[in-house]
Length: 615
Image (cartoon, rainbow, N blue to C red; front, top):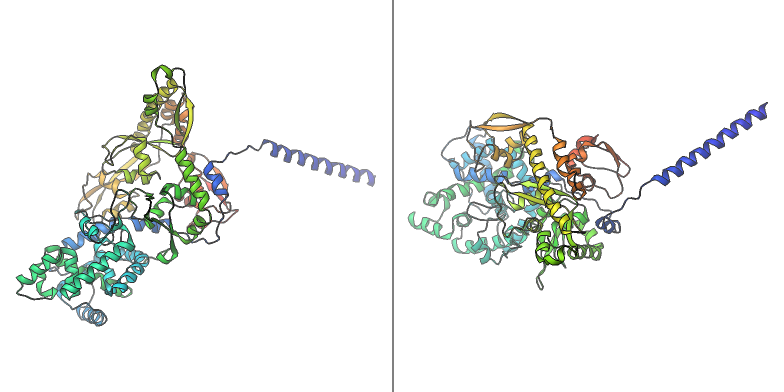
């Protein structure tokens, strides 16, 4: 009896194991073969470096944001030094601190009522701005100090870049002054800064700082006074010499101040007030935001062939905005290659290691993309003889990811290209644009990749007609999206600016300006602004699907309309993955979405970690 029971158990056990093997075999048999792109096949062969210093994306946005520059520029131009500001800072204590600053500085820092009023105004209205500026200074100040030490220029002049550009290398004034040190075109050329279609070295932190240092040194040899050097930097040496003559030959800034242009009268006090806030920020409760990366954590590599920022970002799995930040002198998001002229690319050190270790493969990929660029369809139809058009097949680029964008007020090609992570050259090519100007209301075609596919001329025309229908469908979706927004009114309070208001309501500055027909970033106290509160999106998928169902060549557009966000899926993190590279695998999904769905705060992910996609 016992033997019989044992034999039954053994037979059941063997049958289960055989059944499990069958299931395993079935799983292996039905597993689909996934084809990878040429880009992924190149990246899979890369040698990876173990260093993992990542640049925080939020800090990147701070570095390229212009809202501080706009606000600070407005303050310096409009502040009234004769109006007393109610802010807790005893006059006697301020005098003591200014005296301490004066003792260790070559500048003639002395107390006056106008300087006290500016310091108190900054403390009352710009505390948050200075907290952010101190974060940026961790990246830029070491560059400035190195250049000034070589020319024997006071290191305190580094604070002048805060006043000039709010530490934004892409800042451009109304007069066209550009970069951290706000050089005009003529002055930039005078100091051998290269400016052409591809490059503007006024935005290069290293070269522009060296030019500013040389200018300061020359002006000091003329005036012998650092306050007058600052005044000449703002209004020109001619206006300073006129003020000296009109004051009866006096040579101190505070003695000739009333004879200088109005903007320059507030310029030097704003510089001294900035110096004071940086020196005594702890005493006033200003806590600097910490910079995630510093200049010494980056390095450069000389480029041997022309490359676009998009190609570099795709190959190195890093945001294009990060490359723009570290290489602000390249105007078209392209690192050019001229024979005999070296051009350098600045990257975080871990990315430099990957680049240098795989240079040959990277340049091979760039060459591959150049070889596979195809002739635009409309041009191909023109150059093909009509007699042969019926018999021969023409080559047409098929879009793997087609989008349409309607140009809005305030848009430019650079901003649109950055939004869709493409470069300006491709955007102009796709839309047959000859210049960088684009008409308001025009629909722009945007592609993520192009492959050559053979089609008949009739099929080409049919595809163009369907693309037009797709454009109309997108317009319908846009209208639906606008209808899903609930609008409210916000009254501007003391200390508000467009940046803070836009952030409060989940908008960007451009949207807020467009919604209220604003032509500048200046807003008055008490002004009523229309703001949007996003309601749940209601998209008529039928309108989109009907427009594209008749042709498979634009199935990618259809997939975009339904979006990956409508699907629930799990993703297991692999070695070498980042939130940026994972988000690119799912059209329509952003880094913020993945963080929100998985309660990720610091952006750190580990191999094997399970992530919910639209969980």
